Image (cartoon, rainbow, N blue to C red; front, side, top):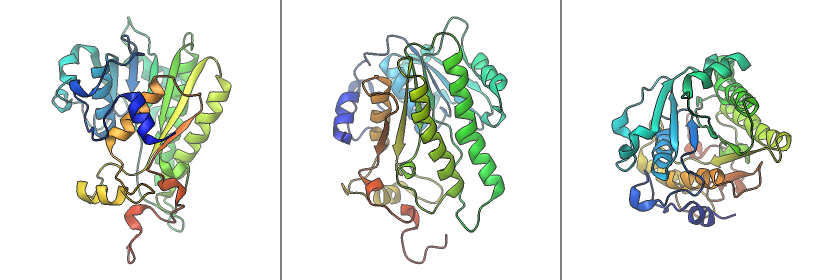
Length: 287
């Protein structure tokens, strides 16, 4: 499936960054369903929160170290603040089904049941083979694998799972690994495998998907212009942007895909079998 078809199905233009009312039609599957986004206060999570609000969902936006600021919502989404609830929870403390259940207890209004879970929060720190950092490994697996797994367990076993949907935010290195960000890559790859396994286990009961983007947002010393340049290292030679990723998530939420499908959003970069992360491809890289 091409990125263009995903964009068309999700009704989001290619240059979207934070969807506006004119850019989106009401999502057919919304109908005031309730959707929970982990890590929803910044970056992709914030953009997803804004997008879902504009489409007519009731959105529960989780955050931890970054407090949720309503002023950061897109202009259109800010009109639907009454359909937004936020709460804080440390995903590193989700260590068993009891704490996972507590997570949902804190984040679910009494008169609502969550229909869709977006496992978006993640820990992204650098290490690589030959310099494996045990603390980085522990932290990555805690937030990127253990927490979303336990949240899936609690979510799917609480009440009737019929019509429930899970979207796990992965990374294109799940499809084509390279030698950088070892702990992050291993944890996301395990979550990618879990996506397919849970889809098999809950076949006909719930839909489980994955979205695997390449670089699309600035991080650390990388400026927006540099990210655009680096994210263009793919078969299309065009940058991947946040609108592309939101389109893929929306397409999963629509339920049009077979459960267990993982959508790469990387312009074909995962087919290039790059040895290193695009940020470190240049000769003389200090990493």
